[in-house]
Amino acid sequence: MKKKYPFFKFDSVLTPIIFIIAPGTFIHSINEFLEGGYSSYFIRDICALAIIALGLLLYRFSLIQKSSLFPVTIYAIVGAVAITFIIGAYDPNFRFEPNFLQAEMILSLLMLVHYKEVKNLLIFNLFFVICCYLTVGNGYAIDKFIYHGMIVCGSGVMTYAGQSAFVRLSQKVKEANILIKNQNEELKKMNLAKDQLFRIIGHDLRTPFFQLKSLVEMINEVEDESEREEIKSLLIESADKGNQLLEDLLQWGNTYQHKYEVSLEKTYLNATIKRVFDFSEIKRKKKEITLINNIPDHLELTINPMMMETVMRNLIANAIKFSHIGSEIIVQSEKVGDQIRIDIVDNGIGISEKRLNMLFVNDKNESTVGTDNEKGSGYGLSISKKLVEKQNGIFEIQSQYNQGTTICMYFPVSQQAC
Picture 1 (tube, rainbow, N blue to C red):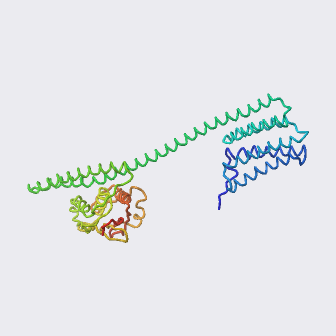
Picture 2 (picture 1 turned 90 degrees about the horizontal axis):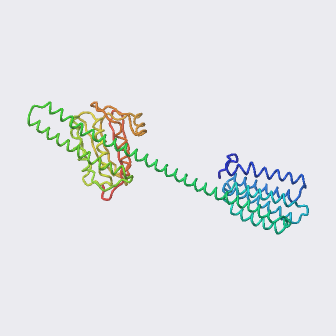
Picture 3 (picture 1 turned 90 degrees about the vertical axis):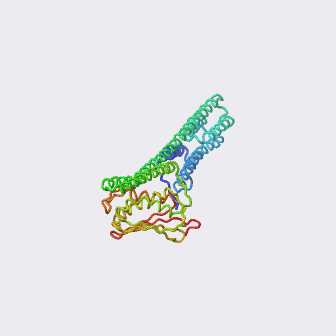
């Protein structure tokens, strides 16, 4: 069903037609009727009024557009002007001068209200003046024809030039506004990318700092020199891992912030999981948690390696945080149709149904304390979900309170993937 345009949403097109042209034509027809009854001039006005009303009805029922409504109205009036002088050529009582001046005034007004038709109206006016001079108005002074013709045509040209300049200026303003809007959207995206990048870097750097803090505390607790030396080597190793992590994150972050298209490549996931397990070693040892990697060595996914490593670090850290002491965390895979599902399974405290439904409503979730009073930022799951989706993956959470959590990630099957 076509949409009906409202009559009463007035603007530069509807207002002059409904409040000026149509009423003016109607009043003129009444005057013609009072003067001559059902004369040719009265019928002329009624026909013009009927054409205007028909145009409004067609616009109302979406049969013509607003851009066509004004030309219909203008040429109904122009046609009425032309018919007036055709009738007048055969009417001995025709009063030429007042009708000629009235016609010139009407034409000049039409040029003022609709500049797009000015060229056609200028041509019509010149033709009209010449025809009037050669026919019904040949007794009228030629200098008056020239004067009125120049006044109307000159005002029409000035109107056309002024409104053309205004339209060009409006178009430039519109283009500038569009450009500003696009730049604002671009800036907003860049700010969001920057904020998310800081969250990712801050979230990932928690683990090496935690490891360094734990090792420093251990140094003060042991007395055996050989154990002290082992802890020192672990400190160096942990500092090197943290430094390498920061370098990798900054390098990846620079790419992430300036490119919306993520570079994907075929990657063996097992090696990524091993690096993440090594990275999480101190945290999992503190809670005596066993990390089990059941990902096949030959499983290959089309992903962004750095991005996926960030995801796995966040998710493993989250699983350790909410797992009970002495429990297991398993990373496994399964082929599901044309996708590979990667699961991270823990038997920790799980997530209540109410909180599960509120996840991902905002970027930040309410941070809850882990099983060993660990604190978090609340951004881990949100970051992981967004990074998985940037790699054409799907992120899901299955959890029951006090029964554990399974994080499921689905990725398209790569060639040779099993």
